[in-house]
Image (cartoon, rainbow, N blue to C red; front, side, top):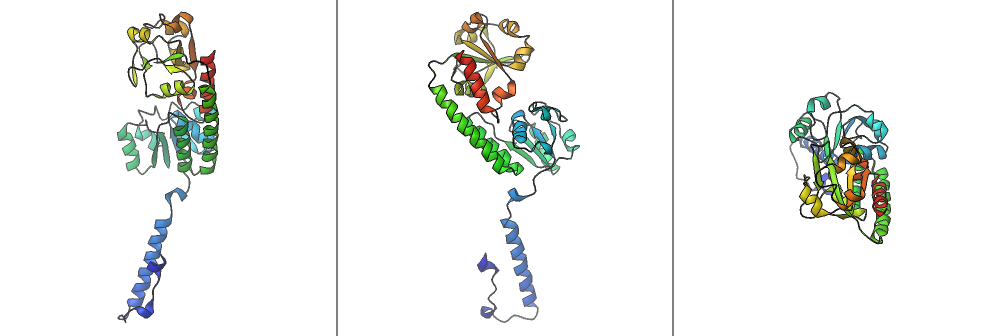
Length: 302
């Protein structure tokens, strides 16, 4: 930069009248351009009107002390209580641009699942900054996501402190889980009423949480979610059925759960062993991740 901006006039050949003025203008313009290049976007003024989309993303925003900037959330953002009091913009996967734009946000901070893509494009075309955060399914990726959110909000110090705590507590929990004497066979059931029941194979946040808590995912024949079948459930022979609390309520409780195909005939069904944990706590991989791991590990050990 010093070489570019220096003007060694003694070495320059004579110019016609007016050239020095043009040279000064060129030097000033170059200096301004280089100064602009050196200003990092991360030093821009933090967003003050934030729409938070995705329960875990919203929880991170509040955990970093930036909840006072949130002007709206999506319907999955139910924690903390202050977030649940905010106006809603719909479910994270089915957002509409018009309702969000009417709020005049300067930032939409969302999970990677947010959409549809056309809505994200429409928001950006309207000049709204949209930042999509990568998903998390481990202690490391949860900490990374917290740091990423902190970077967007200009809360790096708070984010790093929170991420370090999660890494530290997660490592300690991992050591305790590894020392556990046995691993129960677990099946995760997702339900929103009797007509929508899915079970988790591998490569899902549910499977990752089961492993972190010291359980064994009893369904290893596929990845992702598939509809519940009696044959697959009986073959899996789970010792425990793991279900989000709201999903269990949508089935009418434990009796409604074991009325579903195949569940009553499993070891878990015969012993009526069900573990129900708050949806966002269990699957969010957010600031409460150590609490979620410890809670599930304790339930599986009983």
